[in-house]
Amino acid sequence: MKTLENYIDDYIDDYIDDYIDNYIDESIKQLPNNKTGIIVFDIDDTLLKSNPDKIAVYKNEPGKPEKRLTTTEFAKDPDAEDPNKVNWFDYREFSNPYKVYNSIITATPLINNLKILDDYVYAGYDFCFLTARACEETIKKALDNFLLIRNKDTGKLTEIGKRFNKVESHAINDATKNYHGITTAHKKAAILKHLCRTYDNVVFVDDDLKNLNTANDLHLHNLTTIKSHME
Ligand SMILES: [Mg+2]
Image: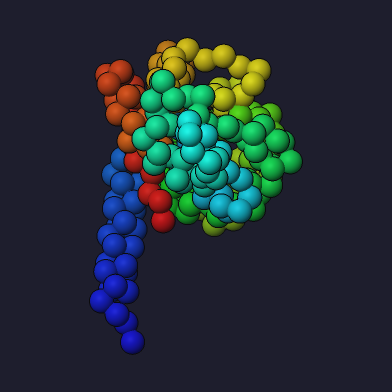
């Protein structure tokens, strides 16, 4: 028998499905021939949900024992965006290429967001990622294997191929990189600003409101932001 909770879950699922289908129908338009576009995806809780056993961030609050945080817990931790507390967090597993690769290829794809990606790629947009992770090259390799696009006409899944713009894909905590800004939100915003000068249309998808709000505060006429659907 269906419990009230099931009904609510179904209602929310239907509502989100309708919302996404309507968004796709109404908002995603084919790029005109002379225009360029790119859809920029955050990774954790946007493109995919990684298995909490596979990768974690460690928090070392002074005077407290080390705490293991899943990527989702880390994203919600208010201390993570405090410029004075950046040293509390240890990303050692995120600089381990083996762990990073595995955390991606064993992750659950977030289908509702991927539907949006499929349609933007179909509409002529390139794809790149923008994540607070490190190990940029490993992520690129893992996504080459993980990320598939559904062809609207045939329904077939195919590799994203040349539409994956690897030059514009960034893992902002990569040890070899140095990005403008202190917090993740500001670093992401600086990259989006650059992309808005390179492409005619830029679409940014992220689950973190801090990242979305900071991007919106740039008031760029050619930037659209979308809140990730976590289901
Ligand atoms: Mg995220």
